[in-house]
View 1 (tube, rainbow, N blue to C red):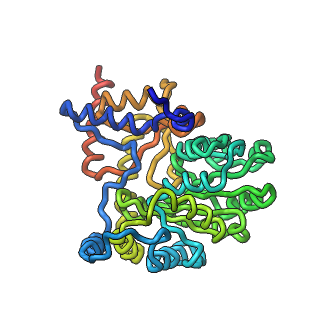
View 2 (cartoon, rainbow, N blue to C red):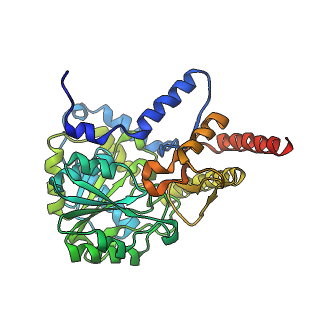
View 3 (spheres, rainbow, N blue to C red):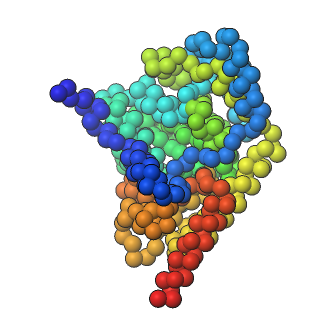
Amino acid sequence: MINPSTRASSTGAYYFSHKLTEISQLEAQGRTILNLGIGNPDLAPDAKVTAALIKAAGQAEAHQYQSYRCTPELRQALGAWYKRCFQVELDYRDEVLPLIGSKEGILHLSLAFLDPGDEVLIPDPGYPIYASAALVAGAKPVPYNLTAAKGWLPDVAELEKLVNPSTKMLWLNFPGNPTGAVASKADLQALVAFAHQHQILLCHDNPYALTLNKEPLSILSIEGAKEVAVELNSLSKSHNMPGWRLGMLAGKATYLDAVARMKSYSDTGIFRPIQEAAIKALEADEAWYKVLQQTYLQRRELVCQLLDTLQCSYATTGAGLYLWAAIPTGWQDSFAYSDYLLSTFDLFVAPGPVYGRNGEGYIRVALTQPAEALEQLLKRVQQHELAGLQV
């Protein structure tokens, strides 16, 4: 028996990987599960995007290895998108690095900047991959608290108590996953100042910026941020392209060079037709975005009705693809409540503790199912609750 590495053993299995296996088994038994647990957009990209993919796939050179940094045209399109959406100037030649999805960027950033013994400040609750990537790099993840009392935003005073000479990196994510919290420009200015003071790298994960968010904001728009910060983004949520695996890293050239060196050992660029299609996606006009936002707004209203019926409390001030809701009074365990919804209503939602200790008592509900399916679910839950009252 050849044992796996300590690295492989220390990270454990990702919760959603085994939960989706369980859901598949239930569906094989004939049950229809409504999955609101995964942030996996069900909508299609613009028809022009798929047309560009098909056209590019017919070109002979499309099937060859591609440049590690992808085509200049894709980097130009990503830079123009940042200028248009976030008012951030990026030099496409060396301040934009396309990625095979932003998730791989989290790992490659960690490999590029962390050594054994380094510490990484990660949000609790927050995306679990931040901690996993730190562990893979041999570093120590150190959680910092996000709480309802502080609007699920970082407390710089607490960060001051956690930072030490071993601290190398701080992960941020606004609008937040799972909380939907939105940081103001002043919030980001304070965090950039903190990073300058302690000479740590701010890694801002920004894939939800254009989803139900009135004022999209990039950390790179903050004065002085490029010296201490990089930003990940993705077309998964903003352009309905999660399976295409197209993301980006933006920031100072020397920072991106370090990540590009790590990437050169794991991939050889992005399939050329996907690059061509992404360029077309990034040209989407305001009308396309408006239709997408209206769709998510309708779904959010239905999910709010569902949560009201279930007696879950929630805030409506957040942004992004999720609603973050407190479980009903009388329930103490988010995993148990999630399992109850699955067994009773064939509904899967994500238990809050998946995202950290501070997620206990909460569930995350994704807006990734059609309105018709949400309406049917709402009727089932309302009928169940009414029957309970009549007993």
